[in-house]
Image (tube, rainbow, N blue to C red; front, side, top):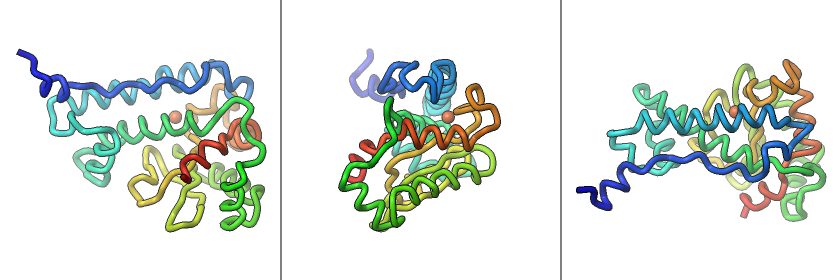
Length: 207
Ligand SMILES: [Fe+2]
């Protein structure tokens, strides 16, 4: 007999829906890139995590709990990587929007000015971090001990495990831009900052 308890314990992680159509970010990020990035890479992390945690104590935990319990655990690297990549990608899709860029909302702009001097300096720091991240990783605007900061993380690493509150992120893995920009990571990052970055999402995360 299948009880409610059993159903909950076998619940699977699901791929969150994209907040816009696959072609909504075109031409900055093409529908082709989103098709692979969301439909293959992001989905792949979800499918792999479900396989890895099936039948383990981690199977009943929500994503953030799995990330918290597996970070730094040598025997759980694959579970951490897939769980964190699910979380990071869901956060990335929401960090972008069609017709983004421009000026941040007033309250966020004030916080940016207090930490970076002005919005342009913040943008430049994000772009510099993105282009200097060696290999795969992520660039983040975070809230850290009351101040806004730009940080970069390698591979699947996330500021969630470093007591920082993510406000927005840019994926700088090659799969995020190679079909559209080949090796020109800086062009991808600058186009995202100019035309897609969702300052409103960062403002909402600031609370
Ligand atoms: Fe990615």
